[in-house]
Image 1 (tube, rainbow, N blue to C red):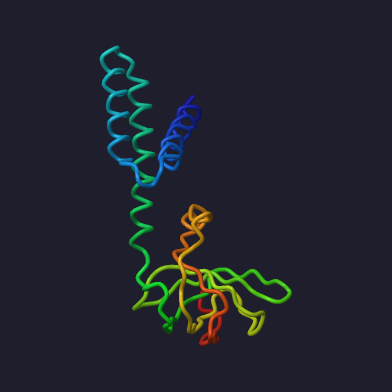
Image 2 (image 1 turned 120 degrees about the horizontal axis):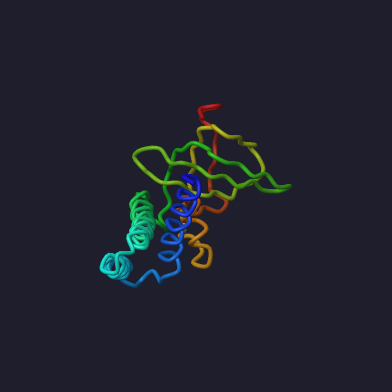
Length: 171
C-alpha cells in the first residue's frame, strides 16, 4: 500500500515537471503554476477531497522543482560567448568517432559551466583528463536547447584553436 502511494506521488511530481516543460519559455510559468495548483487545492479542500488537495500540492512541487532547475542552469555559466579565450577544465565524457571526438568539459575557475567540444581525433582524450582549450564558444542550437539544458551544457565549441592535455586521470 505504501509503495502505491509513493508511486503515485512520483507520477504527479513528474507531471508537474512535464507541465512546466511544455509551457513556452516566455510565459509567466510560476504564476500559472501557483494559480492552478492553488485553485485546485482550495476546491478540493472545500469539497473535503484531501487526497486531491495533496495531489495538487505534489504537482506544484514538481513545477517548482523544474523552475528551480532552470534558474540554476541559467546561472551556471560565466564565459562570454563569441570571444576567443583560454579555458581549463576536466573531461567528463568522451565520444570518439573515426575523425573526431566529442568532449563534455566541466570548466575550472575562474570560469564556470559545462561545455561540449567537438575536436579532432588526436590527442586522444579520456574521462578525467585536465585539458587546456583555446577557442571561441558559441550558444547551443535553439532546436537542441532542451537537450543541452538536460545535459547541463551551456555552450559549444567546434574545433578549438588549441587543445592540450595538462593532466591525466584527475576525475
